[in-house]
Image (cartoon, rainbow, N blue to C red; front, side):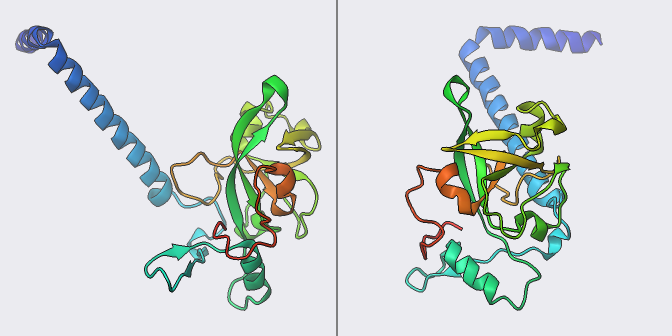
Amino acid sequence: MYGVLQDFRYSTRALAKSPVFTLVAVLSLALGIGANIAIFGFADAAILKPLAADRPDRLVSLYFADQKRPGEFFSTSYPEFEFYREHNTVFSGMLAYLRFPMITGQGAGTHQISGELVSPGYFGVLGIHPVAGRFFGDQASRPEAVVSYPFWRDRLGGSRDVIGQSIRIGAGQFTIIGVAPRNFHGIVLDWADPPSVWVPVSQYRLAAPEFSLDILHAWRMESY
């Protein structure tokens, strides 16, 4: 132990004599450790832990290739998704989603959250069940919202009494109908914030009034 203490005192004196070098070294270590933690966190969520859905190994994503831009792939528009769903003979179910920043609350309590516009039956296709309340049905044509478990716990107090209450999203009032499972963070494995709310795509004008495109009818908008 005496030798270790001697080495520690010597190292401390040496670093104190070169404060600029010490600062650069500490910052480099901090950045390196932080980057490794972030990369491991993403790999842990994307590779090591399965997606919080029923039979995640059976899920696939559909993209289309533009012949004018070989090697590039794009997601489909909502009308294209509806066409595929109506003519589907391969999959047991199909869903569509669009991650989008949304504004919730009013006045001083206004803040931006990450939300998703989703097709009817979104949660049913994934085979997951709500912690409280229910999920969207096959029509999903009313201003209703499903909230994430963290949003329910941290912003709404974690009470089941919030089911049936109203929440301001965008330009409209949405009725909270359900709470997603604790481990469900959407199906997009990226660096962005996971969704805090899910609303029917039919209500996009209320939930995201700043979105100028007519998502329900615009073909080849390349966003779904």
